[in-house]
Image (cartoon, rainbow, N blue to C red):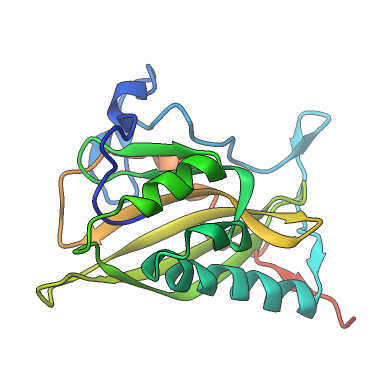
Length: 208
């Protein structure tokens, strides 16, 4: 969640991977946080499996609705409604500064409930849906965050979504700033690669 970190955010930088520094999505060297989900295509018999499973038009509409609801629920302090956006076991990370990690819907509610009144307002746009051969559904969106003084920040949401009995929800999200350039935890290049649109992972749609 872009905005001010909670009082005890759980520093993302404290969990940096022990791997050597790699080039980040923004072109700067750095290490990635240990909570990052596994990336890359599914493999069978040692070879990459290509060809993303299809999503229905209803799936696509519901996923876009879930992503859009984040700004309404979070910015309006609708703490009890965060389950409309995130799974119960969601992991939410932000890379600004030392970074922070929020684990689980209960912690997300605590974070939202004590956010500062000058926390930016958010807009989610330009979403691209990706599905790997194993069926993992990812969304890459741009965000615009408007600060209380009128300054505008922008960045990327990297999401993994999961179909639950209540509908599509965000299981993993990391927010990565783009402009203005801020001090931030660097993500490894292979992380962003999993969210790069390709002929193999762009979501295909069924007619049903």
